[in-house]
Image (tube, rainbow, N blue to C red; front, side, top):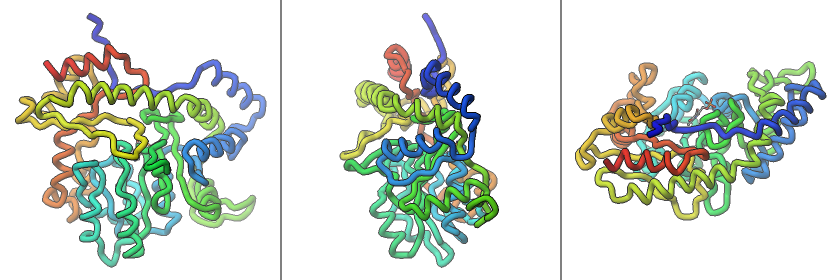
Length: 369
Ligand SMILES: Cc1ncc(COP(=O)(O)O)c(C=O)c1O
């Protein structure tokens, strides 16, 4: 029997012929970066697809997080979740701010709004939640808390490309949202990212900041950075945008099959679709209760690995347990019981647009036997 490796993800690639054609255009124009025509067209196309008024492209999903904190002049303490990819907390640290970890809501994996207020001090200036796995945060409640205490809200929406709640983009919440277009994401530009903002002034300021702070040939208006997306990745992104809906639908079908096959397995739980939400199926996390399933999460993870099925323990360990952060008072395990439980029980099953039915059945059979 063919025991090919089944990877947890696989990049969505544009047609090579079409990509070759756009490369020819770029070569002919000799304009390869600095807000060229593909960059402009890609920004417009993304605004339309994502149903947002303004977007600014970046070279990855980490730099817009750093830049958002800079642009909003965030200082002091930033409330965030430990259940994410390290870049979320690193961006706070790189801005000389102190991350304050708040536990998660186990029904979504996202920061628990009930626990945010207790973490606010006179030094708090912002909240940085994450729509983890593309599951929408409770943006209404988070905004209410932010308004009450005068805090900014920056959403790390790295996983939430195309996610909508009641027909509205989740990216419209808060002061700014950031996206990652890394190769592993639902939508990719190989490396890449973006920031979504709500007005033209902010877009202008972010465009200056991602280009060293230049506001013209001779004027620098702030301590900017270089995080501009080039023409080649912009063209690649434009091509990939044409096929992202089909890719999300293919992922949806995989999620349907996983749920159908696993819903009666004792000790295995997973998230259902939320009412009114257009999900992007960026991940398919399952949670293993070792007593009921008869095997621990790590035993299952290594059993998968032995059989060539590469799940990922996303997100494990918790960010708060890494050496940089574990000394923080909010990083203590007693403060984060739900996040710890989720990190200790999660495996993300293989999930991508290119997963064959046979592959999906192989994953399921491994879990049932
Ligand atoms: C939640 C989250 N935030 C930020 C990032 C950083 O994005 P990038 O790898 O594009 O820098 C990632 C992913 O890689 C992520 O998963």
